[in-house]
Length: 234
Image 1 (cartoon, rainbow, N blue to C red):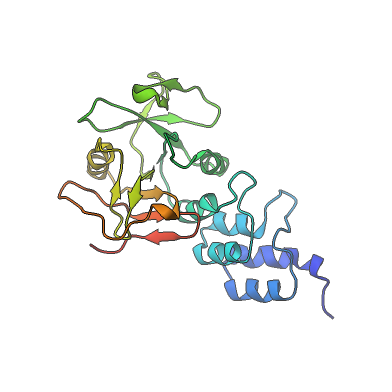
Image 2 (cartoon, rainbow, N blue to C red):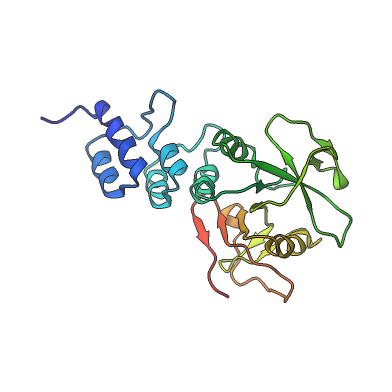
């Protein structure tokens, strides 16, 4: 007996939970609704992202799954697939100029229990300081008029960084706004513990073979609206 397509949603979500891409493809071919949700409102895509099944996330997005009503292009789902399996404080950013707004991602991470932090812009030539923050908490205007946590927020040393490049290449090298904040900050953090440095960018920001100098620190991966790019060896 063939189940009606509407009844295949639980099977699709169960396969997403286990990262079973072949089973998911078969269920979709039978007519399973890709946007079917459980009682908590979680779709197969959300479950796969939460479990860190990158291949499953890619498959579901390629088949038309909607990552988030506020993030229809896919950054949140791809970034979650990479970050969610890691432990530690996540140092993110507040969007400046044309950078991608990371707030849907940060809200999703906070809902999963991740501790967050935001940078405080220092004087030129100095590294960034990160202070603990959670969605809804107070921000003040810092240097360059970028919102940041107030001085009373605890300083923290992130294990994961979400970094907004102006441009990047597949080796993980990036161009920022020229102040070199992350090139100074990442080595200092790595002297304390392991750090995952994740770029958060538009696919169109990719440039083949960016020039790199000795002080440039490559990212470990970049999440775009199309894919997660794991940095190639230099």
